Length: 311
Image (cartoon, rainbow, N blue to C red; front, side, top):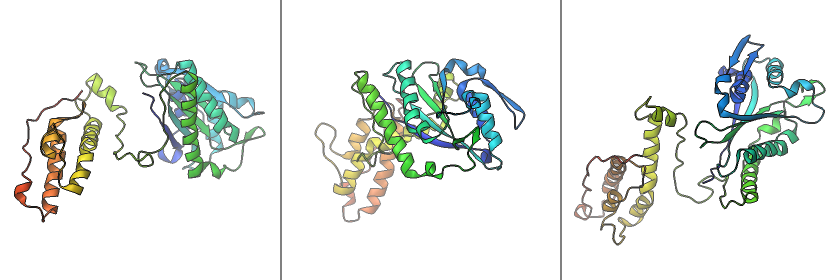
């Protein structure tokens, strides 16, 4: 299933970040930060980097064509200790497309939406071990090129929320166009769950917690616990709304009471014990906020065995 992600972030010196270090990491190379006199060597992670491409506006000077000279010049051009050095987009690429198609997708989107505005952009496509998480890091300059150097002023309009929303929407359209061109039925949607009318809490990203658990470095990372908790809340959410409105919900073949169904049916990947705790907590709140309903009509749910069907 194709997944939508277009995340924008700012790399700032105020947080101790170096755009040279960021570029070295994303391209899987070794680069010296001339301003700080520090060499950043990420060549050991080169296997996860499929390709890196620098995209430039027309008539850009030659030093913008190389990773080391480009980002070192960015560092030299910023004097403030809290300088905003670069903007980065993280784009999830559809697994349904080939690496060549995905690289073309990211490059064409960056060219059309970012370089056309005057940014110098480096697109680095990653596909880590396992090949299940293809994505692109798009590192962009915060200034345009004027002659042989960066402009004295940064274009403030690039920071507008409306512009960011346009970028997010355009990425969704670009992904869907690429999927359609490849003859694939999958589609993505850039809108939030709320905007789509979906009553669900966004699930947290597992990030580095997944490889940590797979390696056995941490038996049950906190991020996994949070993920399971959110999934359990989403699982019982429709029933909770019905309980709040009608007191209980009847559904043939799944138990006579709402708590019986919530204990009988648990979506794969959710710890039963966490779903039980969620239901118990809600039942307690409902019991104390419904004084007009006799207590005998709402017997407390029975705690089941502390099962764990995590996958």
